[in-house]
Image (cartoon, rainbow, N blue to C red; front, side, top):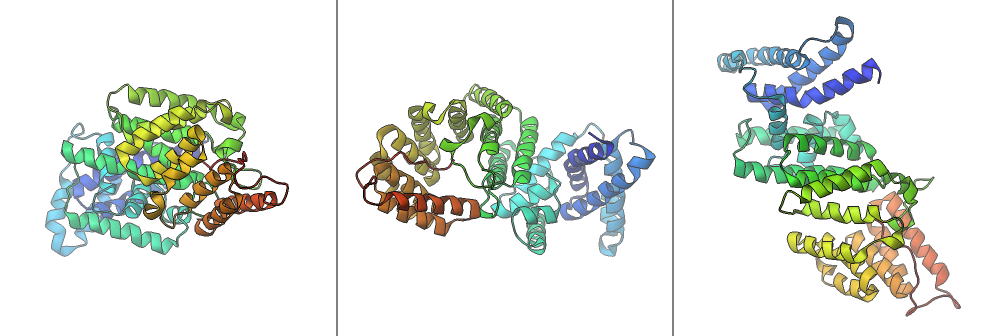
Length: 423
């Protein structure tokens, strides 16, 4: 690693700690973020030529505090109160950098924020991504993302919530929101909801980095460990999920020799460690399912009965219709396509218009040999997705079945072994 990259990584690691310390001291999240950004820029300019300070974190906090003091002094009506706050230096041992980072992460996932706002604010304040980078990742104009982040800061400020660790009951609730936000960030990076690319690796990588950070901050939380395991076990398949032209390759058709075995080993170990802590949560169950897939040498070796049982537990725990959708696939693999299709019927209203319902129905209809109905479902799914790689995959499946649905080819009532639903 060169010196420039090493400095960039250090500043990225320190940024949430410094922002947390400054926001806690001055009580103004938005102004603190501006001050910290200026301090980080100053460090990037001066440290390469002047040398690294003995305490990089302390240097950044002091630099940001000076800017905050100047900012408050420029506001005549608030000069006395804010200057006094700026002069209060807490004892060095009072709050650690990791405490501040955890507080910042919990603040960014404030219950008053929408998931979209919480994601943007987390990536900006804790992840250190620029507004332009976040906007690019979510395919929206930079001005739109800037407004979203600004509104999120204003909502937090208006809530009057102090910058401090919440009490244990509220902290648990807020932690669940943090995990949900990290999960959403990872999913958007692993399977983009729109645009020409299946993956946005910068998002999935950032989600993994932040979840590793969350696990370090909350070492006793088994769901944090389960979420990290889930991300690693899922991301391990990424190298095999696309072909040379970026086309989607479903799980059953992937070259498993391209899966990242080091990520699988780490994910399996984490999943086992999470379960050993006692109560089992949703992320732990999802990680267990991912582990079963990853440990199968071939698609044919997959332990579908175990996956079906795990999805049953997850469905009872979450009530999420997407879990039922996945359980239907597992049921079809264990008990035949008719069993899976029967599970889809109750989802028609809850997932009305969602392309995933049509995609799963198409695959199960193909397994049942009802090619005409499968073609129609594949086409309906392709029309509803905004992801170009998924749209191309679904359209290709419809075209493939159209070639089969001719005299002398398998027809309704004959089971054909087509590809299974994408992971």
